[in-house]
Amino acid sequence: MFSVPLELPEFKVIKQEMHSTHYTVHVERKEKETRCPQCGFFTSFVHDRRTRKVRDLCILNKPLYLLVCVKRYKCENCQEIFTETYESIMSRQHYTNRFRLFLYEQVLGTTIQDVSRKHGIAYSTVERIFYTVAQEKVDLHEEYLEKMQDKQDMALSLDEVSVRKGHKYETVLLDANLGAVMGMGQNRDYESTLKLLNQKR
Ligand SMILES: [Zn+2]
Image (cartoon, rainbow, N blue to C red; front, top):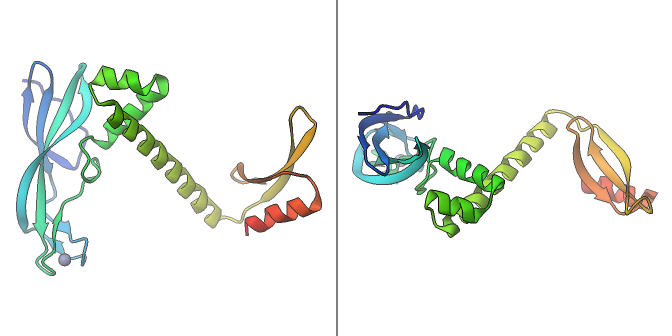
């Protein structure tokens, strides 16, 4: 029998199985209670249980599947029935977050087609995961920039860049603290610079 550290601390391992083509680990969430999304009340009343098969990273080149015992709780305060949520698996997903990230990084090095073939996952699925993860990264980055800008006053700086081999100049508005480009204006005259600054108020 094999035993691997899953490194998903929210889960308790119930059983591990080794098959010729893959590994299976049966897991369930350690926490016995959860907060109702409707009213915020803590409940431990389990309404029902189902099993969801979730693909995780490979071990020794074999796919690892988690068989997650997914519990639906019933709120004892407002009677709402809801499914528990996980840190490592997004709701209704059949792939762990770290596997989604792994696929995304694989695609960066090759192509969607290669990754689809290599891991035996439909092209459209790899494509969807790739673009969703990419969008999540953009959102995270924007959130980070916004947070940083809230924390400190922006130190705006204006710069000029020449485009088209020095025949044309554009004005660039930078946040000097973040080194982030906040906007670009087509000309380098007073009017267009003013317009650029007004956009960022
Ligand atoms: Zn409730």
